[in-house]
Length: 351
Image 1 (cartoon, rainbow, N blue to C red):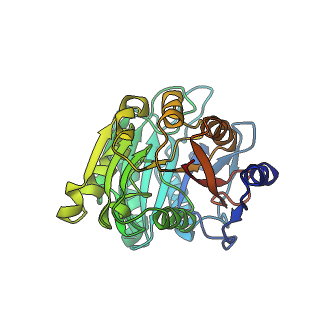
Image 2 (cartoon, rainbow, N blue to C red; image 1 turned 45 degrees about the horizontal axis):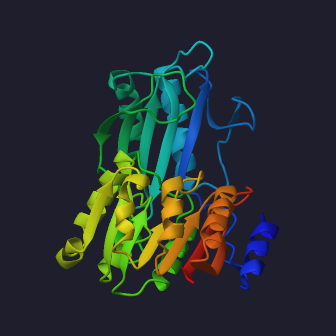
């Protein structure tokens, strides 16, 4: 991985920059944990590599301590109510998994109970016991229904038992809202550094189009600083968070924002008015139509945040082979300690 990135930088005549390392423990503010076992002896943890055998992790060192506390409280609540965890082969049992997100400013946990059910009724007693156990450490409590045989963790059904509709984080000069169904980074301090680095590359009067914007952590702060920003996003929960983030901006900043919902390939027109394009795609990389359009109609500046090195390298080759863009900066941000994955941040300029 490091050799590949250094090779890309060397071919561009630049140096690969590496963000400083972070503390090795307590950095993970977001976790999805599987729930298995028996009602009297539930297990809460992760699947072992290459299997659906669960590894119980009662006191994971990389988690924020509140995540471990929520997992323990869930176990105790399941035992007290004699509620069965999910069993995959017979497709029986109630509780499949939990998602826990710790909001930094309040140090409270947004908790989602993912259930093998179509209504929240059966989970309601568990929600009450869990809320009592967590007390003021609970930010909000949610039910998510996922009654299908699937490896997808979250289903499409939602119910809020209590608390605010979104976790709020201050990122690079703006309030960013995370409903429970929206994507968010688990390493918040590292993600902040990526957003702050992006901000240093964008002038105060830039015209920005961001594709795969999520809830807006990379460029909402630029809108607050005076830029005009068009946000493209396809996920309903992320769009909900993005709308809340735009609404929280000062009125003059809100007027400079536009939300373009739907697939990136349907909004190639956003390239026409932008001097800076920001892309933060999922691991599969850029939509083919968008990548080709960027190669043909190169903006003055393209900022690419990537969590998938293979797709990033593929897209970068297409963009550079066009001869219209040149790689000026390449950075490695380790947002996934103890894994082979990294976040790559690149800046390309019109050649």
